[in-house]
Length: 179
Image 1 (tube, helix red, strand yellow):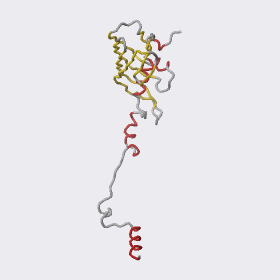
Image 2: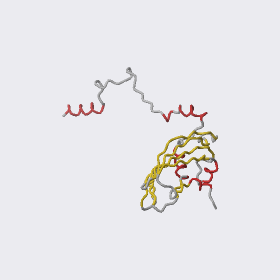
Image 3: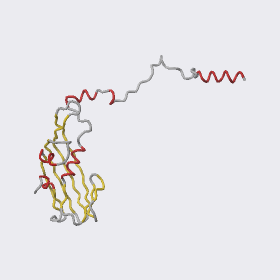
Image 4: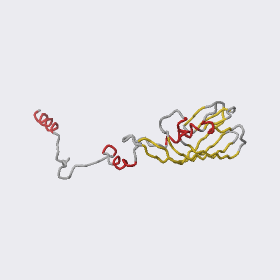
């Protein structure tokens, strides 16, 4: 049975070295087909420029759109803009391996590159850790735990360090004078 996500697989065996372009509109069907609970709704435009050579594939993902998130505080849905340009490097080697988030090696026998998890992972990294509804943003900005506040003593309340002697030192000086 053909999966909804099969359209995000690019057959690299059929392509000769050169530059190729792919374009997809990611929507609810894409998000619901993946085993994840971060995003269920959204409309995101994906443009991919592929530069294929004998030893590597360089891809540039252009991501632009909105996803619907649930506010962590009010549990109300809201739209979050996601956009960015993401470079992906795929080197052709002896085995399939993920070196880093956007750096992979594939074997020479690999026929397809599945961009669905790469696209989703990059969209997910564009989502803020704290998902706060825009109507609550100003309230969130005023929380005291998020800001560092530094205060000093007023000059009339400050202790003059030249005049001040720790009472413990004063006691030790008395003991020294007695001996």
